[in-house]
Image (tube, rainbow, N blue to C red; front, side, top):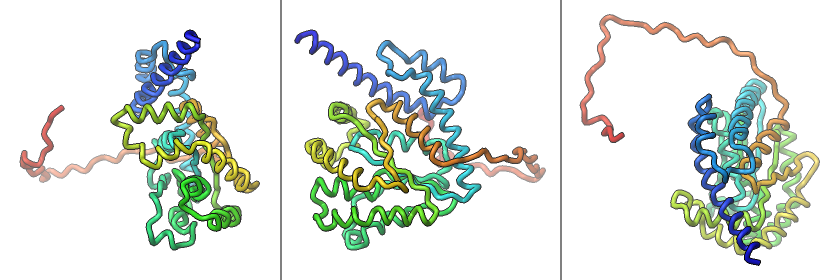
Length: 307
């Protein structure tokens, strides 16, 4: 029994370290995209490194992000409309995947829709109305960080909708999604799946990390308590809304890095795209005016140089 507890403690410490490494890697992802990466990753890797080799993870992530740029160009060139829904439990890693997808794309082409709780006015509207206003025009990609499936999840579990509204949602959502697809929208739906133990660990990490405590709300705490109710709601949701035109795709998300790579690779496979030929970019010669002189600026206008 003592040895078993020791093994459990070692695994717990390994997962905590993996979470800390992942936060560090997030900064590397933003800054490193050339040969400097190899040196820094090797330098930072220890015996507690993630199951997925970090060097491979970085290289594959950058490769996939390069493909996402090609996909973006294709979407613009072909005037496509793409909608991707990201659903899952709190702390399942949806935000991390969305961040990696949008990280190197043009925000005018790829944008994130993360809607707050509905206002009193929105509660009186057609349920789908506030989501419709965020749908893409031609040449756009919209990533929904949670979506109209709130009704099948949090609203059902927390009692924010009645049984009539709940059943009406299931009756109408397949037709709604078929309407979107019929209008030319490419609709892709992901559910991020984590274990009970993994969510508990991620919540504990957020509680003890001052930089991530903002991610925890009273609603998150209550969702943790109602794990089994969310499980049942998720099972019903997938069973009743997994349609041929817009199927659900489940991402195994206990390992964050694998989940990100798997999701991005799958997303790329869902939208056939090609590489757009571009004219070579030539920087024009700057015009020099012999009478031009810069006006001096007051020192008071400058931000203090603290670093």
